[in-house]
Image 1 (cartoon, helix red, strand yellow):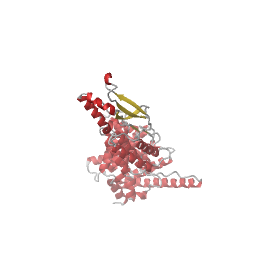
Image 2 (tube, rainbow, N blue to C red):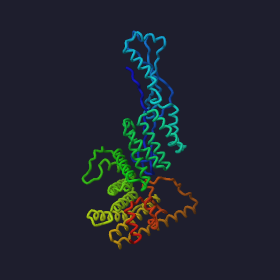
Image 3 (cartoon, rainbow, N blue to C red):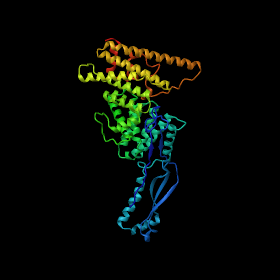
Image 4 (spheres, rainbow, N blue to C red):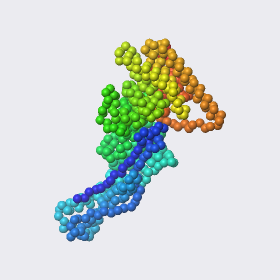
Length: 485
């Protein structure tokens, strides 16, 4: 009996950080310090030879042997050897006459082995060539190394994907390449292309070879796809947003320290495993809430933002906890119908007002050294106050609607005045401005801050829709207040 042995290449691909936030389980995103990609690379040209021979010693010297040529490559993860093999016949012309002494079964086995040796290593199933491996190594170096060139890395990754698919490499390996190229597209601020690659990666990981992949590949791909859709904001379709919401859900389930058997506490919307995942990465949880808002699932958005606020609070991140809490109130406001006649809508109205009012007052004691983060807290407070004005106006509480709007305008004016003074001081002292990095805007750290938010901008439909991710219903409520309708 002869067999063809080929140990496949394995990818040990962690994720890369997609925001400036800390890496909780190492699959939080794409440009993080502390994230890593350990990729198998084959560079050795050393060979070893293993010989198969018939069991009978009497004919051992007269029958042909078959050689298994194994090209040994180092596995950089555990120093084990990854081998790619070929079967080669060492039958000499002088030994061919010995076939006449073999029985029919032995002849059939001999003929199968010698004829299949070429088939097994045909171009459709061969291992990656040294040249193809070098191309992949260079792609990784350009994307993850010190001399970065992300555009060229994408080109080389594309070539590698084509090679891996043409030679039928394992789905787990190809999934890793798609996921890495998706990360590269995200850095190039091309979320639609990234979303396509992440989707392909997830498809392959759900396929026959998916169980061979590193355990971090699936959550990294799900989080990547969710963030790519989140980057589209309100330009994403509801179907896209629902798909991204599912990706976030799978991600939290996979990174959880608990088995997701869908156990829920009484009245809970999510399983204990998903809640545990949220506690491990509240940054991604805030994003999930925003995706649910785009999908029109305002109750889920509010609950996720509530859980994100709690998770941020538990790690001592008061500013982001306050931002998340105010977004919870905005979600509830977005979910209110035009009429307050129904009992259910009346309960939601009461809850929305309370959550917004409590969140707005909770930022009084927010402190920190991160000036830009504190500026975003004030900007979010102004947004929450104006949303509350729209809710109150729509519920016929017109007198009460004026106060939060006036306070919002005053606070936003103070914010922008402070920003301009700081800029003048910086210029006077000759300090360089902080570098402006083009970002996709999916993170809690990408929300509107100083010099962006003002009362006048809330009359700009594009600003409200693209920057604040407000759905049409909430836009209408605030518009009615601003135009006194």
